[in-house]
Figure 1 (cartoon, one colour):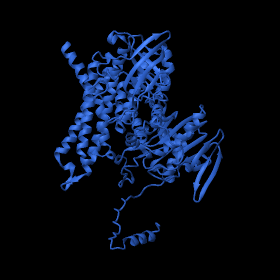
Figure 2: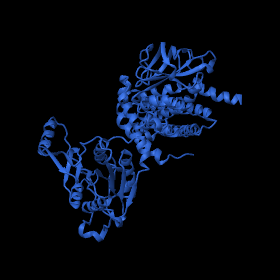
Figure 3: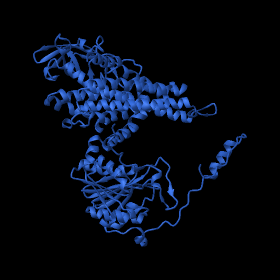
Figure 4: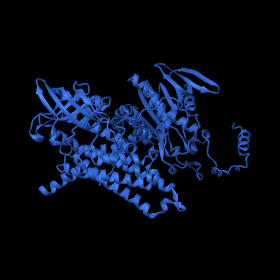
Length: 378
Length: 260
């Protein structure tokens, strides 16, 4: 259905060179030490990884969503957790570039695109996850400012990021009463919870973001009052594709590790590759990953073309890619036997990192809800 | 300033490299062709000068098979301004003298250079003489094997490691220099560079366009491979069985072979 172009091949080669040299050798240590490598992110920014599908006007790379799928998959082969953070950062930059005024874009996008500044996306709350429209963080207009109060939960990059794109309530009209504010980290009244102890994604910090009478200029609002839910959902279409690509990269890396391991490991007098059932496992992993990759590219193509079917395809592809990536990683762990359970073999890290992809950017149950509702309502 | 960077496409250093025993030439199908790593360091030195001196023009020059455009695109994506590939069937199996004549002719056709930068040696041939030979043909001074390089508006200088010390060397321009892997860590090409690279000029020249003869007609100025044999299989080394004296046997072996 599709073929990678010569340009895309060159982009992927460049990302591979970078990821192989600067990310892969450190990924296990970063995971163990919960280290967020902002210096490496700044280098990634020089490559163009900070604003992949952001227009060139303010420093983005001007690529499309299909390119981004290839790029995030390649990054995730080296480290799914860092790749996932870079994908979230890209969503933030894209939001500002897509929904900001010329003045806002010129002010914020250049430093974000080079990753001199990092961005965080604040939608989820302690009491509002899948049901995002029920969020309660409130912005009350006071002259030229909003006064912001509330708590955001599970925020990637929180405490380190320079800018926070915050979905908040400006009216009690459900999803129509949500607005989007860009909040700087030094805003008085903004604070952060402790770094959460997590199963995976250890290389990126996850904290609560807390607003207590934080004053945010009205000039920091993206779009009009009430546009927030629309902006959030638009962002999530691409976010779902990106996180799917991160899962495929992790799954592919796990498959490659498992293949190498079965070739070198002997049991009962012969290499494990002589056991047909194990080779069938590899074949199934490779086939499922390829099927998911093809589907993900179809969804990315729909997003590039602004196809009316984008929401449905992105939801389906997110579920398929994140389930497939996790299953491949989990199977690779099993194929490694006891060694798969050891940190230094790098497989259990992939399993831990990919598990959360089935939960975030809209849980896979919400993906089924989106698809199911469309069937029933049609 | 105009800087010409010499580059080469080589068989992948990390894979098996084979000689075709019939022709005595490199079997190019046996391994993936890749840009030689030293190219990028040579270019990085030139790019650092260009970063500070925007009116610098950098041309990368390769002699090689047609698919060597892959190497040139990579160097263009890093920031070189234009590229030239000299490719001609009769150049297959060229020795260093012929290669140097061709490269020198190409540099003249480019319009000359204030500075020619090359890697000190390629990972395949490992002759390490091309920069000096090109300098000889062009009648330019050469500073070979520099571990560090400093380019000025009318001079180039650097440090070359020699047995037991190092040499500080410098030359007026125009000149030819070759650099070692101790120089500049090459930058990664960025997405903009990659997309811009395809729009940059990449000229392909044949020998006729350079007015140079190669192949049998040029036998008087080039060496010709008359025969080639495969490297004999490695003999198994002596085995030391530990009867309590293994350590001293090993030490004696290492001492006898002047390894300690």
